[in-house]
Length: 382
Ligand SMILES: [Zn+2]
Picture 1 (cartoon, helix red, strand yellow):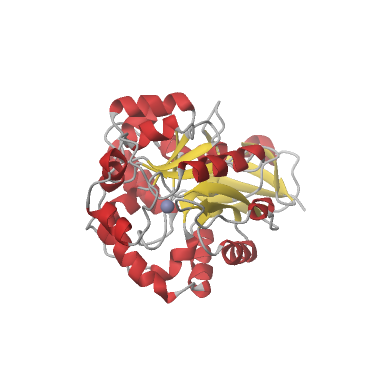
Picture 2 (tube, rainbow, N blue to C red):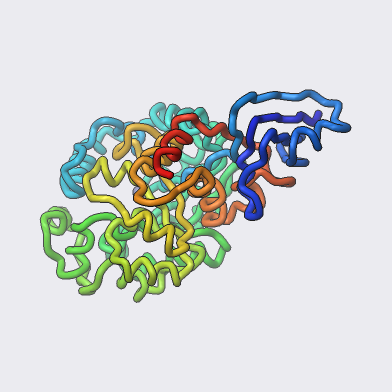
């Protein structure tokens, strides 16, 4: 039976108007039927009404980047000492193996904080993570990550044709220094051929830049010692320049982190139409600096937010990610602008606009409630 949801305000996030005051949403069987003011929709509606009172209701959130397979590493990786120290700590702790209970509770944490869709990345445990995600009630895309130089350890191509009840697989590349150009291009093409998004960690830290420019630095030495740079030839370019040369950036691509970009590179990236996923708390946790958030937004890049994993964040609550950014954003950012980063923009980046990203007829009837703390933080920033 159809239900009418009433709230003091609805962040509908449609391009023509972001908000409706004293709003109503009629939904049935998991889909939104009508959106408007309570006064207009209550007339002629005889079913049950759920009144959220003073709340601002918004579309359910989309977390554009996580690694649920690292959930067991919560609190175990070193914080604030840079990427080389973080990854060394992570490699030492990773010997503990896959912790399915930790992944289950991470999924609960996502759902409890208003997230309905997660773009997760799996390097080793794709099937196990997908099974847990599917059982959790979350919708998802599982980015199966190509990593390694030479023939390496390619994932089975048929994994990309996997679909679960609530999600499906897509291809990702780990990073420009860790994955051969051939493997990156192949993964990109595999996703493109299937009409799926492609994801890549890009320009996350200074060590990545040094490895690509001339193969120097502590992190390069660590990788070399472990045989992980065998066959790698530094292209002598910055991460963005190299990604452009490889033809990896286009509107179907989600570039994750983008901390190390010059102003000119932000403009170059904007021209490709690629989307960017910022992970501000992960970048701060690891100690790699912070992305040029304001330049990316101003340049018109489709910017999304992700929590990254519990190995580099304290929680998977995407509202906390948005609040962290809002409190530090240098310039005007209003509630609609902040909500776009966790609803409409990731829906566009991941090709989910039929089902997610706004409150409009036909979309999934999945909602979140904007926390008071975020509205307060934005009030301060404005
Ligand atoms: Zn990541």
